[in-house]
Image 1 (cartoon, rainbow over the protein chains, first blue to last red):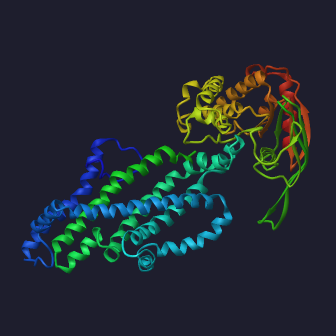
Image 2 (image 1 turned 30 degrees about the vertical axis):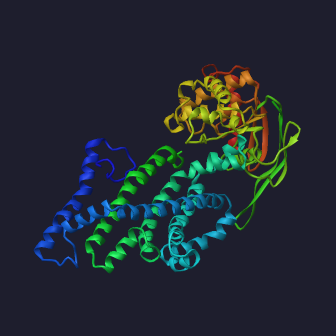
Image 3 (image 1 turned 180 degrees about the vertical axis):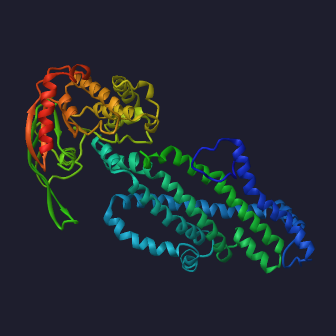
Length: 272
Length: 252
């Protein structure tokens, strides 16, 4: 855990001691929050319908894990995020590359991108439910939008940041259009693409929870929303904790190391 | 090896700062025989890099022809190998993969292109660095890799754009001598751009002085080969030619 929660940094840290110290700095406020929670609930005699005690949340956790419902919600949410993200990246990267090498395409699409990136998120839900119905399609579409625009834009930035001399070098060595894309443009833009995916997923995760409250009957957002109808604050709080922890795990265990690795290995282009 | 002919080359472009078209290259014609080493010198802004970029196909000529052998060329192509001032190695590829890049583009399978690339790395004294990445190498080593990357692709003509301008003086002399050794063995047709008069005289069969976009003069360099710096620095002929070229460049 200590390694995974260390904040991202570009330079190589001097070692484990520094990682542990950074991890401690990151975790300490969370620990304080966790410890003060039962204290505050007890001291002010908070009604369980306003905010749950630790015990109730723990019980809700045990219950929802053992009956499999929590796993079903998590699986549904993660599945939508994975599908929406994958689809978005597959479409956005080629489009971003095309924009990066063609000023005309770029000039035409950039204003549209500006407009739609403002909308990318929950604003799409009403029309998405009309198009796709309630459930997987509509929510995946929201995820897609959150990831798509930012990845396409970052790909564009990455491609345009590749020094022209690298493209010239490849061309004079016989690289055709396809080889230019696979050997120069994609590797050169990769650090930006990965950064775009990380940022986009951050938005997508927030959008996902909101969309699930409206447009589905399974998933973490739905879990929160339904619990509200039954005044089950312990389930709501459990859901919030799960949502936060899941994102931290995804970001710190997968996305941040991936971003760091790509920048270290492939991001030399800016310095070359 | 093939000859390189520039015929009545012109380059004009619109300068938004001035608001009119300005002339960068004005009617430049140049014959470089097969296996000949020609250096183009001139003060900065004289258009020497523009000429190279047009010959390489990176920049379209406004008028005129560029002929390799007997074929008129447009756009970049592997018949003209380019060595860049800032090396332009692909940072995400190892040295051996950079040197084998042109071979890969020709569809030569990996074992074969590694074998060829390794031969060229040995030629440049780089076999130890084959598996390293460009940013792990010194500038001098990167440019050695840049030179053999162009050579490994067997171009008809080698275009070198101030290739040794961004390495230190000692390394530069070593690289110039190494280039002479390799060129002596293989006799490439070379168009070499530089602002360094000594370098031009040391390397070339012929020095072309460029001024304000046109050819001021061509000076044959008759110093016998092989040339080495320790022998040439005190050589009367070398001094005389360098002084002559320098005078013209400064007057240009």
